[in-house]
Image (cartoon, rainbow, N blue to C red; front, side, top):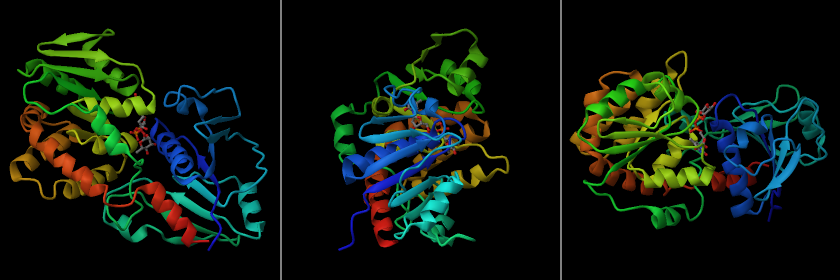
Length: 363
Ligand code: TRH
């Protein structure tokens, strides 16, 4: 039997926001907790990890937290050993010295480029593709998170659904609606707030700091809380990662964005609205459409229309008021569908397990 690949190095360069480090941190701690791996997480911007894990000390170049060794990836890092598995997150490019050292080792590490998630069908064909290095005797493999069984799957911890069920409250049509508003500042937040104000629905909307709050403040001014008709809009602090999950479980409708919060909203099995990470060439709209196709499969026509109208309105900034009311009216049916959707997705292996298996087969 092949030796277990014990040592893993994950390299993460933070481009913007929290998704890059959110994904890497989640993967690192799961590899430790569920697969017994020894993981070093190299990150170039500790300050972006700190809000997710408040115990992280941004002044320390090396520290351990939840069993993961967190290393600051600065200009001149000294790597005393290379790992059995090396993960280059989102094409962040490994340090040249590290690549050279990898190529000289007698047992070559399994080198993975962990890609951004997409539901577009082309990911099925690209997942697992090998890319030989142009000059060194190394091969890099492309690993695509995704929604089909032909991709690397989605990050999902063992016991997540059981934990969720311990916290979740039963759906009901007459309770005060709780909404979480996590989006980019390009979302039509002003139009949504106007729709809240004009709606008969009583709700409380939780707004995290950063882009969501900036967008709310740009429309309403001041620092809140704001009472708009039946809607109370209130700020919340940025929550540690596991508390953020609990917020998604508690809320009745979750606005989420990017990659990691989008996946967490799906595991929460509550109605959600996705704000896709905007790309200049409009590529994000293809991602949105590809996701909507998969996700609405098996939905009844009325629910699908309500859901599609809201996702499109939110991402294109059109017809928010009517789309919102339709979404709210159909939320119990959407919640039922989302429960089944989460179960269906969870039939595929989770990303960390798939990665462990893939690496064992590609040494
Ligand atoms: O922050 P995001 O927009 O991140 C990313 C990056 O922009 C990345 O470059 C881009 O390519 C990618 O999106 C698609 O959205 P995301 O992915 O949802 O990451 C947010 C993380 O922050 C996620 O791990 C959840 C976490 N979070 C908390 O832990 N607590 C909070 O209070 C909030 C609001 C978020």
